[in-house]
Length: 289
Image 1 (cartoon, rainbow, N blue to C red):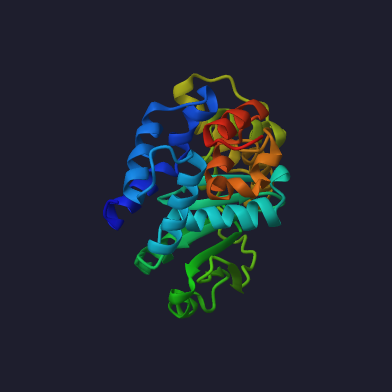
Image 2: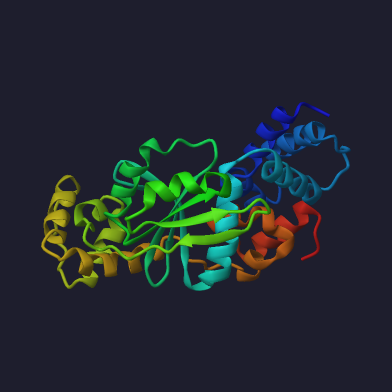
């Protein structure tokens, strides 16, 4: 068995959308297979151990031995996205850039909500700047922290509209402070800058604008000028609806609720496997579909 530190690093590299995308498309991945073999060695597992067993063991290692951000994100995905928000009617954007900050999880359903993760290894020095950016595109913001850091963040967030969620020692989520809706800082320019061209066109069309026929190099300024004439809250209502389509679930919803795939929920929320892709994943994991 390899060192615990090496095993943790190996495990963290496995739980990514990039690692699993070839498995869903082709039923296999040479790079992921190599990583899994290395992980078996690091975890002291036999070479014939099934991939599902390795994934379970790797996730348990991350959860119990290391304050890894993926475990927080997977918990949020499972409890809030798959559970509370009913994934079929919601969308989750991971690592979503808002201004100069990057939101760990950006949920869209009847509203927009940012979940910012702060593990025990994170420093809160940048938090005020991050929160200021998030409120330019989302009226609801929550900070998710380990219970050991709770008092520190309670002091920081007192008197603010920011919600606070604690992760317990048994990896449970509990709301310590509910987020209050705050629309006063919504910024049309910031929201525009998070959109792709087709999304921006869809927003403007939904707001009743005729899209100007201009060269690509002038398109941004013309679209922005139109958008800036719309009240921020009005713009946000359409923005939220259009942005939700970027990652709205269209695949096999059952795969997101399968308890045997719990360690992979954050990955699967990004990839949204179809029924056929799900079959390939189950086969790769050596699980019955």
